[in-house]
Length: 254
Length: 88
Length: 207
Image 1 (cartoon, each protein chain N blue to C red):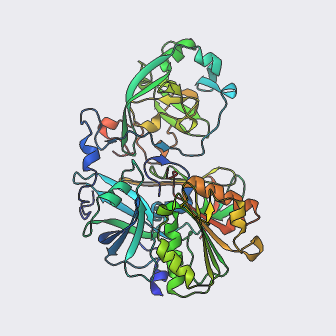
Image 2: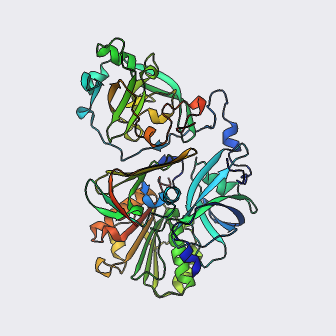
């Protein structure tokens, strides 16, 4: 697909483009997905991100990065944003933004934290909170291409209501014997919950059918403390540090 | 990604846009070798600090400073004295 | 500013409307948080191992252990701080040893050389004119809000020069070197302004 080739071309100037909000979907009480139309969008690879820039009426500007949650095959670009209390940009994107609003966007950038169906080997995705966003781009791409890649998603959330895309993930797993999803809820579990509880530990990681000799492509994304905790455990379990690709989101979502 | 609440360590991958302004290409997939400890890895896997001021990239093995990049309205700055080599 | 940039309807209006213009330099917004910005991992220094040095050129003119430093005259100030990344924090309370008292303790009268370089654990440096430290303009702070400064905020001790952008208030400071000639520190040699007056919006070299 030519869009994916263009996405990593060198010497391509990185220009600020204009994104227009086409639709906003409420995912959880703290998270919304923004569906964007970007004129002249050249495509992206699953896992890449964009830089966005907001300009206030007095000229003041703020810039942040967000992972692309949509697959390259999808028509609109999706960013899934979690409101960080006291933040400058995310409360605006989650609470103020409306369909029709516009802001600047630059990208896609980041060829390192990328997976496509052309990559060999099993896929092991580990998400903490809103860290699911770039991993969802990978899963959606995998689903659109109907690729039979053995895949495991281990998804840690504070509570059931904080799980993002639950129906879509369940639907993907139900119709795909090569995809298995495990959830762990760290703070609050509903009555009758039979899934995992508490922070990710070695026991949860070992449950995935990808021991080190199977050389899985491992992607870990979420708040910085989560990513460091999980990466350290994976290395202790014998996985090659260089096979673990991490995307730290910064401070913990408290 | 990182809000302006606490600028903890990120991955080099988060500096992709900033570095693209300097190098006119995505260098996060380039291999970089640390002058201090000789270890090599993709730029995207380095430890990234101070992202709201520029990009300060350190070796995950020894914390040595490999690269600093700043985009200002008056020009772009790049310093790589801690890097032995960069392979695209 | 890029005049193609679309205006984000309603962005920033709430927060920056609360900004008292006479108190906050141009381009800044007030925050009640205390953002952390570091150029490297947070050093974990035990005060038993901590020493502070004052140098003139290559010579040591004063050195203090933690106990000795704590025994020096202490000053408490309430001040506003301004980060080059655009946040300002008002009425912050700090306690420490003023640069004036440090010079007195070292037995130094008028320091003849005009510049200072601050050297810190982790390798960070920043430079400033000595004139911007004396006359109660600068201190080595050990307490924030009556408590020991947290390591992420520069503890056990950091430089505090609140009338300049906060990158000059070097975290984890261990040594102040008095210099004849100005040399640029960590950010100053990477495109940031050599002086950094927030009221003149001196963020970058060339501003």
